[in-house]
Length: 264
Image (cartoon, helix red, strand yellow):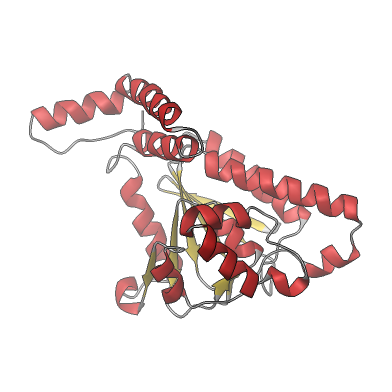
């Protein structure tokens, strides 16, 4: 198995595990696809954390040897399936946090870009999209997601130069959400610290259903026109108004107490 899965206190942890660099193959993408669907359908899972095995790599992208030996049809369908898998991750109405524990380059960054929050370990490695050095483009959503994140001109510059950055540089550009140093980890491993962070979005702390619908409103609405985005927002809000957590949140506010959410 190249995807390790475990669940703890409402958090599903998916670990890319194919040493030495956690590069992905068609087999890994199929396992990741299945793990995403399992986490999506599991009512006990409220947040997904995606990370890499070991301490050196989150993911170094697609397995180059595999691509060298594959025929053009296989490469096309491989990229298509990878697109579908990452879109499934992006569209799952549960918060997805990428814990960047090491080098995050090429397709590895493309995987991370499909997450909602990207937390990087300080000085863990380089990050960027260097596919131009192979004579190809970032073909697992990188051209689209990076442009939407940092703007067209900056995205083209980063991809055309193939520049690799530090995690701090990526933070300054908004590619990662936060960078954690040893002081932030407070003696914990990086992955454990991110899992602890993720637990704040799990009931009873947060109304995870509301968090998931916020994500859906942004992911779907941002790709539609403004009026269509507002319509999506209204429909999702109406669904939330019918939820047990909305009733609990409103009651707790009026009673001036801390709400106890159940993710229902």
